[in-house]
Image (cartoon, rainbow, N blue to C red; front, side, top):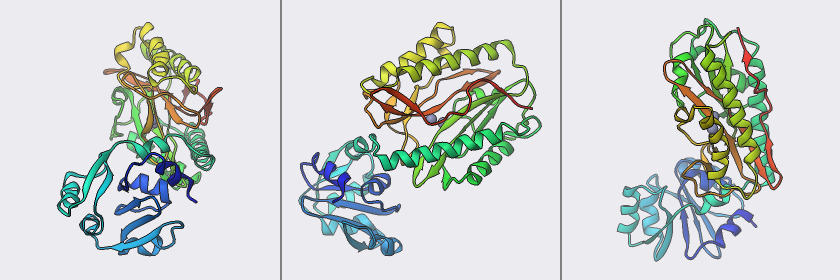
Length: 345
Ligand code: ZN
Ligand code: ZN
């Protein structure tokens, strides 16, 4: 019996159509951009087109149904009565197609995402492995020359290192943001050549067996301007405070505040404009979230990032990000690469 589907069934009032690809994958192990899972009391049907049929027939515990390429048009004919659907995954056009076929659609929010937020042992192993790959890649990158290479070159190098260390893929394109580029939290690496005496933010993650890791370190290319050097120390202190705050039972708001207070008290409050962290799993941003508007409370088995940043316009950026497993005792850090300021050539 599929334990994930059993736990999902407990939350359902009517048959449930799952169309979010990561949720289909979580529940069935089946990976496709054009598939749907239909969970009823007695049966689970998996729908996908010819391209995925071979793999679909191998999925245990489901009845596979091959459909035309227009999956929802066929589902509109096959399904009837009340059907719960994922409000955040079904497009308006898809809704019209199903409703046009006479399906009585009932919106739901976050049902599978709620299950995904608490990882089982198999998932934790994959994430631990992905994080270890990222850590090994950081250790090798720190031995290389930064100054004189462009952000794009260094980002590509980090992607190579992640693959060499065994990544099956990347959580997202590697971010390398040097000097003033780093003042934007989601900077894209550009053609700017890395210069001496600046910070270089490197944010990257590996995918292993479908699961993502996520880690940021900030390097210095020689002696930093005084304000930037001071900001590094504050960011690290805030990151450590965030780590100490993370444990089961703590709210996303309180965990965020533990780090934010340190940054605010040091006078950099306006320079930390994003949340402290986010959940990670099959996708790189999922529940729970640690930020001021969060409604989440941490549970054992959550995997979250702890990543305060300080962004100083025109000068540079600093972000320090660890990936941790939440337990009743606190946070188990999966990304042990040093957080002391590493100076590179
Ligand atoms: Zn990151
Ligand atoms: Zn992150």
